[in-house]
Amino acid sequence: MIISSPEDFHAVARRKLPRFLFDYIEGGANAELTANRNVSDLQSLVLRQRVLRGSEQIDLKTSILGQSMSSPLVLAPVGLTGMYARRGEAQAARAAQRAGIPYTLSTVSVCPIEEVAKDAGQSVWFQLYVLKDRAFMRSALDRARAAGIQTLVFTVDMPVPGARYRDAHSGMSGPNAYVKRLVQAATHPRWAMSVGLFGRPHDLGNISVYRGKRTSLSDYIGWLAENFDPEISWADLEWIRDAWSGKLIIKGILDSDDVQNAILLGADGIVVSNHGGRQLDSVSSTIKALPEIAETANGRLSVLVDSGFRNGLDVVKALCLGADAVMFGRAYIYALAAGGQMAVERFLALVAQEMRIAMVLMGVEKLSDLSADLLAPA
Image (cartoon, rainbow, N blue to C red; front, side, top):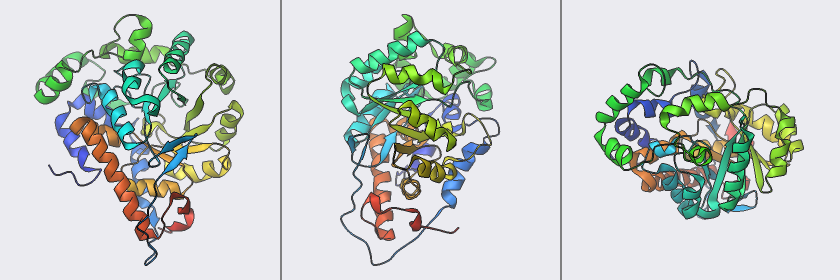
């Protein structure tokens, strides 16, 4: 298949992956209304075309939290990335480093912190959940710091797992899940050989290091359910700011009222996020929530956004509405599943090229020129 756009990787990933993995990354919570709106609301935004105003000197460079970046893109934390390609987190981190952007390692990654940070250096950010086991959280922070990681992304929109019904049908969870996964692996021999056989160990690397024993995929859902903390409050997060001397980003902000809490906590940035529509269904899309949140932040902290972003035009729209950078999740996972590190590099290059073309046709040459004035009424 010819890859000519960022979306082309989706079809390849669907073909190559066992159903339980494809549905896990593709799916959302409940009826998946928010997951779908994340995409459709972005598509509904209309860009203004301004002719005879373009430039050959399109500059995508930016800086987030003092970190220079080749473009306003960040690879978002995605659990079990190492199941989508052999040692997937390490491959994705190397792709991000080569592209000059950050990669965010999930708490529930297959590859442990040390393996990923070894090759990708300070371009790696680390994402941490709010968990009941505070000793695990402290251990993870200490290991991230020792590995040279300087930015922590703290996810606050998952005090309990969302109702993800696809997983019970696909084999990720539910009755006879293990048997379903085995059958699906057998019918996808390329994945079974590359990831299933040579991508081992298949465990939650960061958690296994802490527990001193293997935490398998079968333990994944149960461990998460037992350790998420539905009673967490903003006051409970103060020890995180005290324990982490590096940059702190709060991920999961969807209401402007929560921006002030993040500022009071001492956060350096926020991610406008609804967890890709995988938590509370029927909430706002992130692109609809973004303008008010960015206005409330008013430059007091960096504003990133994720959920529903698939291409360079989506990024341009978010920047027009006040975002400083965009996090890609599903979209880069499709590329990783399709062709590993090289495919992720190709994906990022395509997104950047789409941004450059759009900016020429909109008559702007640098990111700071992008504003809401460049969006037209639908």
